[in-house]
Length: 595
Image (tube, rainbow, N blue to C red; front, side, top):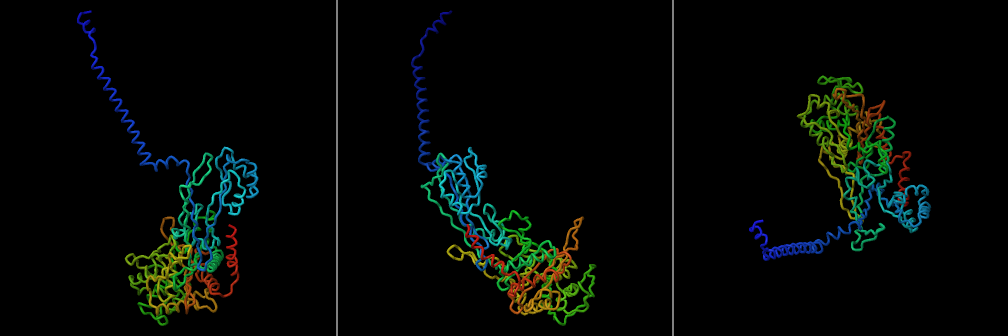
């Protein structure tokens, strides 16, 4: 080993530098500790002071339970105060098996009160379950009896659901509420914001056994019940329409049918029927197609009921005289622009009055050759065709009315007899109401008013004139012409002794696509009758439509007799089976009192 190395190794370390290093490390550690401790202090201040409320909620969230208190849905009434839809209170029964002190005793008592078999209850309870439902839709009386037993581990949940006292009557008008009491279709849907009310809620704290204890720090927010809706429907008239419609559809083995009764002065819908229908109490048991409101959502070629448009134009614009204007009807066969047109009978020379009374398609088509396309379109539009009526029900169809720029050579003559257009039964009813009331097209409506629980009116629908379609003098002439249809023409089977009725039959062939996708007329028909009564002081407009009747298919054979029967019953002429609905109505309060 060299002397130099020895000298180096024996040289003592610098004690000052070591001390400085230790001091530096100590200072750094101290600073880090202060910073860390300070961060904790700052975080505690933020959590405890500035975010106290937030973390208090988070910390107790697993202990708290918010229970919604459902609002009572408003009642739907007919125009005379009959209840069409009401709210029923019921209870769900559940158990907490691990809280039962004596399970056998509890099961036996529940069986005695509910009527359920002991084995049935026992099968639903498992000892390792914390919660299990035993039954739903228990009546309040049963729930109160269970409460009196003061059994441990029993839970009763208060619920509400919709009940429709008249069953299938007016089902497509009222609509329905589903299992969760959410509105679906009809008045229930359109006026849901008024009917449903505002739910309340209550907060509970759960203990270690899962029991709920009211949280006194939070007051119970009581629900605000929904408002009541008063419709324009007369439930007795509704039953009459449904009864006669069902008879007619069944008698003629038709696919379906619709009928509408309007107040011609106000536009109120007094009754609206579709068959087949459905019971909103058990809506899930019916095919979805039965929910459809055919009277406002289905479009069809109307046939001769549409001839009032051409008649109005001829009387008001062309100044035709009903008695002196004559037309040769080609003895039942006529070719127009290469297409064959036929009448149901062989007619020769007829006056305009006779063309309407006998429903001559050839006579009307030949007279329509004098029409100007824009003027004819305006009259059809003014009568409300090709546009929505604005009724306060969902899923209304607008119909089809082509513009003059889309017309072909055959369009005006065929439209004048009710082809190349599509309408709804409601549009036809509104158009005939306009003829009856002096020429005013009214907006139809189904709800008269909405009232709160104190009787204050929140909404009131009033008669509204959409436009003046024809002048009163022309309206009167048309009324007398249509009265002649019932007295002397194709509408004779709609007549009622002692009652002046004006109306028009309609028979239209249906169009279906062939295997190549081309639309063709087939041997299926839509039969209809539209009219109003009494003629001297019109009150009611009534439309009957029967889709695809078998065997007989003319409107005079199928729809007109139904019109007659309905008119008899509505106007007060004695008719059998009139009392059963009134008796049923008297049972409603008895039924609802059970709940």
